Amino acid sequence: MCVGVPMQLVEIDYPAGVAEAKGVKRQIGLQLMPEGSLAIGDHVIVHVGFAIEKVDKKMADEIWEALEEVLRMMDEEEESA
Image: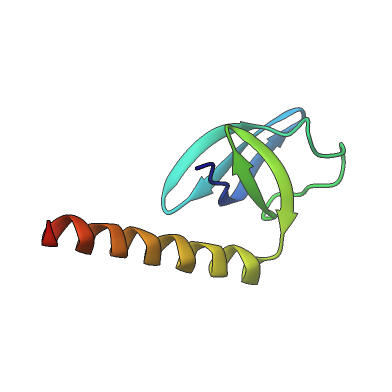
């Protein structure tokens, strides 16, 4: 399964940048997004180290809620095994 993770841009030096999620910062590639289309504070979906889509904060929060629910379910399943 492939998962894209919502992250918030904290640095931009196109075609690279730094994004943060849950206190973790990662260098990411921005070259799949049009130059000038992103700003510090924007939320993007990061997949295999590249920003692939810009999303609003509400969407980023909803995705994180869903990811956290999946992780909780996996933990519960592991504990019951």
